[in-house]
Image (cartoon, rainbow, N blue to C red):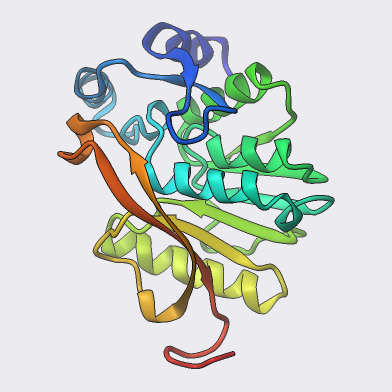
Length: 222
């Protein structure tokens, strides 16, 4: 985590409670569109959008579920895929996970995860890299919030999660009805009405579902 990245996160985001998971505080942008334009303007060729600066609906729902069902992660090694702000990773750490690995492709996100974990008094191992063509390592649970936002991303994530599930690690995702979620591969665990930034989602509340991936073929019961 570079000092420059940490300074950028502190400058452009304020530490505030997450609306649907107030037990957790995150560095969040007050004005989403301005920060989005700033990062795209400076880093349009090599920097992802600032997903780390917002508490997305899928992440909020999944973090709420983990918080309310700590037995899912307690004492287990957890991987938070495409961690963004680290919200889900922090929820897992607070719920008693043995270890939490949060992976991101954006250096600013890695800095945000580290800062947010520190602010919440938990340990999260923030890692920079794209692991979607690899596997989940020694993870015993895999979590992913709001990752089915594009066709290309959805295909890669699904293949990764299937590998993890077939290796014995349950894979849970939080999703607010994104178009590219293959619902026939998942079982619904819970659904929530999650507050979201209207500037990003065009609504104030999104119905958001926590799903568990099945390892079998579409429509199979196992």
